[in-house]
Length: 457
Image (tube, rainbow, N blue to C red; front, side, top):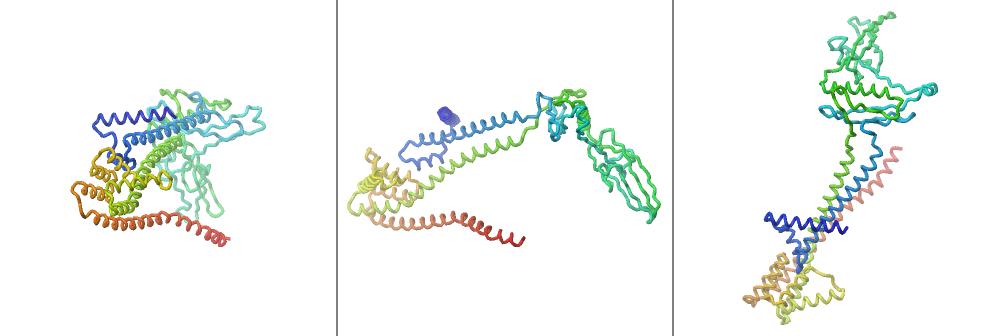
């Protein structure tokens, strides 16, 4: 993990150098403002560096975990690979189902995909007397209809059950109903290139008299491209190769066909791609979640400061009314806050931390008015900016109406706090709306499902 952390820090430093070389600020203004708001009085550049290093470290760990899992999956799938030694297929053991293989044939000008059905390994002749092998029968479809002739049928036939004389009935009977349907539709799809010979029986019936006519016909394929024709010829050649190897434990696929040199590979499994996309989505969502969390922290900081503003300005007004200077009142509020934090009576608050920083600036020799101005700039909220400018103006040019202005500010601050509390309450109620809807839906399901089941019974 230490190596990953160092690598992440090195990449972040490299990013800073590249941005600096291009004349771009190392950190965006938006992120700089966010960290200035969250970490007052601290070197925010270092905090940003730590934040981005942790983000990048999380991305690197996620990618490493993703690659590790993918490696395990590929390793496990090696045992499930059905293509062996480049051109061998495992034949099922006797009694097992026909195995279906999908392969991509390499060597043709264009990619070719084939689907093979490898039957179980055949028993020896001695075993055939006990167990009959499974027989695979291919049926051929044929019909005439709008075709040019009976020797070239490429479309479905149109059978008619009546003749020109109403009392004569016609009945079409194909040689095999699985090849040509009784209504004339051609059902067979895998027609050989040289065509398929079959016959139709036409039985004419008139009363008790009937006569049957046999019509020989030949099914032909629809015109196909030269590439498709080559692939079909190759499939038939492949079936012949498989027939010759029925007694073998493995099926050896040909490495040459006509003028083509062939090789094979298994099709890429889409589930691997889905897993990669899912992992990438998780990493991106994790990164976005951290960015959203940072934005949420800034929002919570601003809300907390707005809630504390009325308390701060009220304390400041009371202390100044008691005769203390602005600087003395600031120090008094800060000292009370620090004491309560040390005693554990109060948690750290952003607004008071900004006041602590302002007092430290004054103690280190920075002019009082400048410290108040910096306090307002760091807070970046209108009420605090207004208060800071008011105190800064009082130091620079004086203001005999300061007490009145502070009292007015106190009234306005408590009114704003009341409105803010009301808005936060409404937001909390809105967040609870979805759980309430889900609970209502569950109650309806509990009530209605038994009712519907009762009606169905």
